[in-house]
Image (cartoon, rainbow, N blue to C red; front, side, top):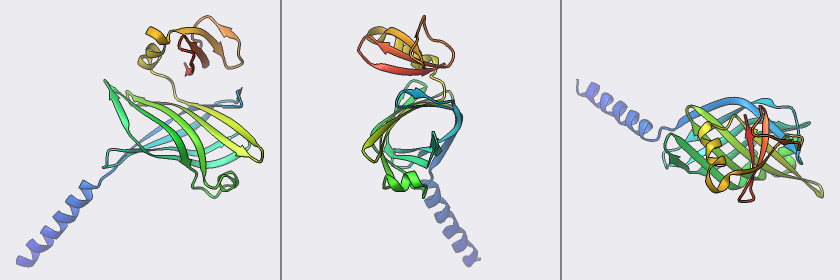
Amino acid sequence: MKKFFMTLAVAATAFMATTANAQTKEQFTDKLAISLDDTPQDPVDATVELEHLTDGTSTFMLKDFTFGPFEVGDVIVEGIKGVKNGDATTYDFEGTAKLPSDKMVANSLNHQVPLKLHSVVEGGKLYAEIALFVTMGDETLKVDCVFGKKSETAINGVVAGKTAPVAVFNATGARQNGLQKGLNIVRTTDGKTVKVLK
């Protein structure tokens, strides 16, 4: 009987240790609109995974990323902290992302790429703006990506107060009378350009 209780105690301790180090993951599947040097490509289906670690940071992973004819594999941003604002959590990052795959592009970039990320999780959906700066030979290609649809809260934040839109353009650069279905490029009064997928 004593042996049974000792085995039970060891199992309980192992379970508690595993639970204490548990990580949670969220997975999102949506359309990814990609522009290469401001030339839009057809949107593709894509998956983003957010892994929340016990130290309070999160890992953002764009799975099996491909742009144009180039297969990159997973694009991973580690150590980002989410900022809660009501029901929304924002994740911002500017730095170097990891490219762990053995794909030719990942190898040629030494498994890393400069990246800027702005992402919002709200209502079980994820919206992300991702800019990658891919150097190939003497040339640096700017790859802009928009994942998902901006929530009404996020859109209202862009058009309210000092960030009110000055102009709205479609993906080809034609001026629009407000947000249209698809990719919108919004220039705001503070001089910023924001991509909005509606």
